[in-house]
Length: 342
Image (cartoon, rainbow, N blue to C red):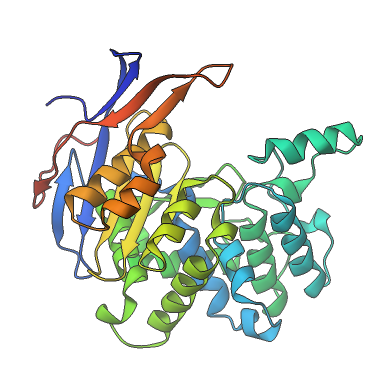
């Protein structure tokens, strides 16, 4: 099988990336695949919408009067831009907690301009700059509302982490006793399950009432609506999730994860897609996503033209010169073709 993602320097092939893809409907049927759709995977931050379901179902969002933009931020891997940070701080203020309550650690944000300004002004990185600070503020919101310990909210045994596990079991259709756990980059539990089950979760997120009626579908619809109405909160300026959801104007809900994960759901067809770049390099994920959307007939030429930087993604040098590109070179197979798990 030829490598599905090609990286060119000039006109010369320099590198390749292998991918695994699952395209699933809300019933769990694998409609299309590439590689191993059953590959056991940590979907990483792409599970944030389902982690947010566990917050919504406690009633905390309504109790504290959160807006849709707040809920979208709770699902985010944000860029640490000013509007992200101020909203996280506002969430903490409403639950009467200080920034030090966030246990997500910190890192240099995607918003390099803002980071450089911070350094020039003699500031230092704090937890609010973490791309997971929105998620952590949501977990704290639920713990405060449920009168649970706020110091151990990251622990596997904390009631809120158990709520999250139950949501993922239900929405992604995979028994919780078979979900393997480890720690994510921000210190909270991360869940290992088959790639096709992550895709199933996004099929149900995209069109929840085609899955079933009831409160959980209402929660999913609320989260989908918040993310697609406020895509700037999910990522930020020049971020793929944000640009994709904005261009599709509510049709696509999308969430990336670290180590080359990209998941999305289509509200019109009710299908979910999950992608894993085998070597973990995120630069291949957006290119693969756009190729899959084109093969599935989702979107039109006008949308593809506006998202062209993700279809034939540029390779830049240190001078910001375009010296190559990344392109897709694969065809989805109908149905499920399970290859060797790794």
